[in-house]
Amino acid sequence: MNALDAGRRRLLGIGAGMALAAAPLSATAQPAPRPEPAARRTMLSAASFGAVGDGKADDTRALQAALDATFAPGGPGFLVIPPGEYKVSRTLRIATRGGPPGDIGRHSGITAHGAHIVSAITNGANVFEFVSGTTVRFILIEGLDVLGSGSDGHGIYLECEHKEHYLYNICLRDVAVQDCGGDGCRMVGNVFEGQVINSYFRKNNGNGITFGHGFRAGILSAIHVFGCVFGDNGRHGAALVNRCYDVGFHGCYFLLNGKFGLVAENGCTILSNCGFENNHQAASGFETGDAGIALQGFATLIGCGAYSIYNQTHLIRAYVVGQLVMIGCGGFGDERAKGAGFAKIGGRSKVGATIIGCTGTIEYVDGFDGVEMGGAVGGLRLASDWRSPNLARLGDYRLWVDKRGNLRLKKGAPSSDEDGTAVGRGAG
Image 1 (tube, rainbow, N blue to C red):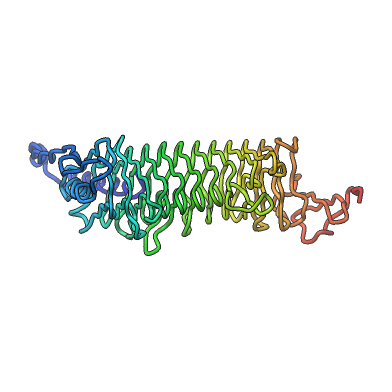
Image 2: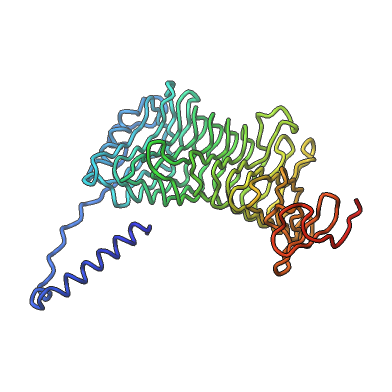
């Protein structure tokens, strides 16, 4: 339940309590009216609408008719696409419209284990779209296998670009999207409180998957991705764009993508137990390659690792403007990528990076410095530049190393490199 639901429920509870307190005893003793019987829920089959699934017949019209019947206002809400190979020549589209009367607030979805949607679309249109003009909850898309033509658009496109409507409590599970001309999957707008589970996004010309706030309206948030693979995509394995950041990746693998495994333009809530292998396949060599993750903003990484024998240079390249925390992570390489390391980090001077128990080389740029505990350095490494927020603190005192190699001490924050008192001289 989100904050809006919780607030509404509290308000309804207060209203009900006030009404009961004001009602006479005789009124409260009346039997409650019988609820209206719930609409009968049924499971439709695409075969009932003429879908053949032999890989030769064009099944577009039959599949679209099945989707229209399933998701019509008051419709059954469940569709089975039986095993088979379904050729489609134009976009399969679910579009909900009309405000509250068309809202879907119950479990609905598509089950398609063993069904392969084979795109014959050549005009850049998406293969499957769910465009919500109402509030839609509890949608499950399960087992859908999309094979693109390379000249189509995105494989699966989910959109809700509205201020007052939402597409949430959604789940993509056991989905595979390959060879599409755009992204494997793209989610845009008020799409939130959802999961992508055990799914596979590979060899798409764009990104494996893209998440973004709406370009007209809508905030994407509270999405979690579990056990998915993003590989061999023409651009990035996954991308967080248009100011969105509230996506978590858990146990996912990003490999052999043309550019980054993950791009997070405004930060990423969390990455846990994720692997990044041999990304930047489009680079001409290790010298022109880059990291598995490109991050600007903030993030928490736990137990993530990177390995390279080609062009990937680090696990992460970050410009930090919030707080970067990395625990038990590492990065290394072999063969022509022997110089691969763990992290390359820069950022704003007033923020910090906390690195605990990580392995692999760390490069700080533009005077940025972090706190390192354990891992490759052993012990505790604090910042040494007087401008860093991560200086050693002993009570009210700060310690740093000036440009001449002197250890300096000052009560309070230093105002220059030569502020305070020199308490020890370095070798230089």
